[in-house]
Image (tube, rainbow, N blue to C red; front, side):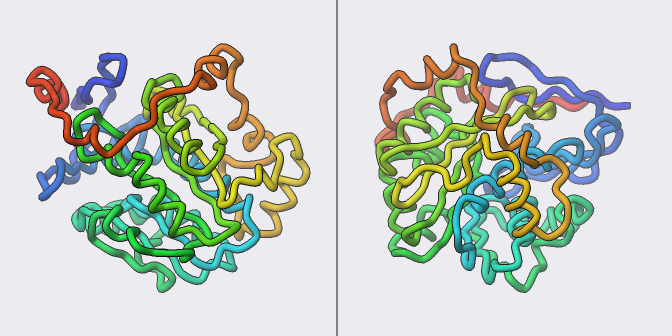
Length: 314
């Protein structure tokens, strides 16, 4: 039995879990890519030492990420997934009969190649779907210049780290590009780091700045050791078409629109994803400085650079 330490989380805590087998470990052009088997979490894909997908509970994350925005719009013909090279968000999008085309954009070709080979048990072969068009390029570059193209844009990218180029995918400037690329009546959602983090609050207020308003969501992920946050909005902002407290309406819509059964999302869990404790709501609703492109130009300190790469396998 092997033990693996992951990188520090935002509270500078280590996360330790057992690994029974390392199926793949390599350095791609962009990041460290690993596929592991864990007796507790099953098949896992990691990027730079952090779990991105774990068989144990990935469906909770991906069903929340995908179905919440898609259930709240009337048309789902063309969808964009920015990131998501593991194919799990794509798996969920393909459960809608009215989806005609999905553009999946991931900068790292190896993530898609490895996921297609090693994660087919989890992603159900979604990366080979005829409805999917896969583009290996920068997500911002891909989406720029597109006007009224997508019914929904789903963002499943790595976290924004201060001084990192990833900031460019969470900024006011980027969300304006996303807004333009959406069709009127379209939906948008982004993963937004942990619910209690300062990053979540800033992403929330950045989306509000561009879209007019936004909805915070969350789901607890044991494999992330945290309550994971999402931020959703619409073009134009018109509130939720599917109110969280309409439990029967949610279940009827799921039954009508989605093929097959969902493992996590139903009327009650849909409602629970919108419930945020009062003390956290109070903090979240205090206006925060929006994220701007210029922050990506800041340099991280030597200490931050060293701690960002901490990872061991024993």
